[in-house]
Amino acid sequence: MTDLVACYWTVSGPVEIHFGREWSYFDWQDRCHQAAQVGFTGLGLWHADIRHQLEGGSSLKQMQEIFAAAGLRHLELEFIADFFVDPGTPERNASDDTKALLFEAAAVFGAHHIKVGNIPGTVCDPERLAEAFAALCAEAREHTDAKVAYEFMPFDVNVNTLESALALMRNAGEPANAGLVIDTWHMAKLGISPDELRRVRPEQLAWVELSDGHHHNLDDAIYEVTCDRNLPGEGEFDIRGYVEAFQQIGYPGPWGVEVLSAPLRELPIEQAFKRAYETTSAQFAAGVA
Image (cartoon, rainbow, N blue to C red):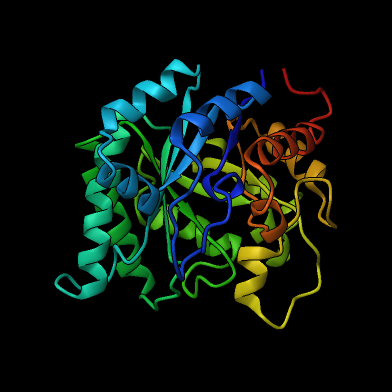
């Protein structure tokens, strides 16, 4: 069976990514119901949405019970940034607060992974980054069995090539509870082909996300990355090629669907989930059970 997970930004509705209201207007129970109804076996949660639900009177346990009652199994949690900056700085304090929240949520849900990385594009010495990543993984083991998944991307000034991503894993000591996030949108934008990704060993891979797009770059890079992606199969990238490459190296799944798209966020909840599932499932040659 091929398990597909609806990542948070794909089905969050009309949120304001990174620069405004990041919590979803869509009720958590409705999200879980829609995910299961169309065929997804999991969902993603962004830290601001979790906080909003907790502030509204829900508990993590109640959220987990709703998730499980819908028949969902795989939960993605995100996002820990700035874990490598100096302790005591505002950035590190915010990172530590998010880390504590996501570690607790991962333990309650039995989450698949916690996504980490460098969305702000903060410069860090490679040796220091590897040490901080290893320490983060060691701390995570004290709280949860979830993988610590490092997502490398074009605007990560420290890790923006396949070689630097693999080097981070090696230099961190290849933690057993860690691995890379491979997002096909980022790979295509970085010029990393499906064939190149066959170098990744299965144990170095924590999570794969499918997202389509166009090869030309917009002048507004922030708008492009947060609003101008395409559903799998509806852009110019070789999504099926990426899927086949990961299948061949032995990636067992689950597979995330992460499409940050302004038009998609304007759809009613039923249509957003349905479109995301149908377009992604079509990228698997053997189909999706």
